[in-house]
Length: 135
Image (cartoon, rainbow, N blue to C red; front, top):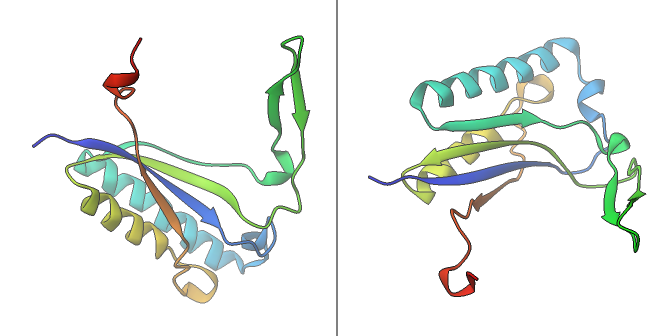
């Protein structure tokens, strides 16, 4: 069966950039252990293409080209309410499988082991531009 790549983006709902840092150490370690085991499980199934956590918005810059082509930067974004904290790229047989993986990631343990139920945005990775737009 053919497979399709999906990007699963984990967004932080916005209770401060480093909410996780305020958790008890055992809860942070449980969360990290969940994420590491989750990546191993996806790797073992052959569905994981890539996964990374991202630095906080206090280290982010938005960049665009100026009139001379040189970069113009904006940021930091320490006050951002919602932001991308990490992603997985998976290669699966159906969108339903991508949704199942996203739901499992969403239930990562938070403070006191309570599932975070974070929103995970699932988007198909385009394999090529639309044929009618090709040059």
